Image (cartoon, rainbow, N blue to C red; front, side, top):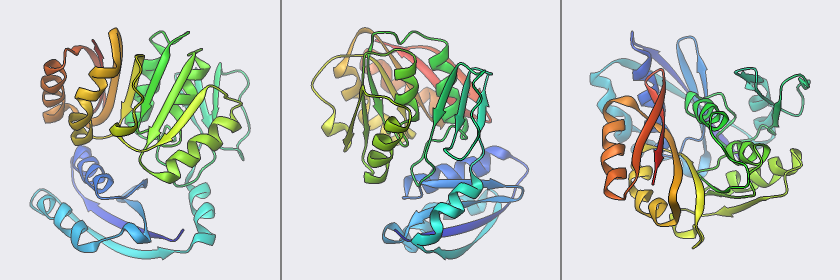
Length: 278
């Protein structure tokens, strides 16, 4: 698959403004990002790129701060080389080590997750993923039935398995993410993850102890009712992919409509990960 690389040069005094721009790009099809000193790179499959749609989405931000972009075609044969060159291992609280197949392991860290660096979102580098992993460390997963929505690389599903979850269903609408989840589960010798390609309509009609959803605000709002339908009483819902202001209050209001009670949230650079209980 060929990709376009968009190099964004950003001039702003507020980090959250660049994060807002990245989040908007994610909503129009960009699936991989690399942050730089003065901006970032954003990647999108050639077949998904619609510059008119892009311009419509980002134009409102021109009134808030200054940015520009340049477009470069990345042929398929060069993609893995580009991605691998940008992939650094990460250490979360000295308890989780996320690395690629070409990095050296750290056996002294309790949980190791190996991710084959392809196009799928979710390597642990973004604040939302790392906060979700932190929340998972603080809560109980043993013997639970878990649903991971917007699974990306499968990193949260893999972590749930390593925390002794009994069964995990991992769902993403992107075929690349679906395939990546299967491959990464195998890399980590995980056998209790079932991957499904689709959105809320493919969520099985069963009851889950825990739901993980690291997507974006609009999708979370749209899918909240379905989460409530398949979450057991006293079940836990972990959400991320949105900002503290104004998103958290909007998410809380929607959750409340479906019997989901806000418990706590983490914050990192204005991004939020929140826990709810049914």
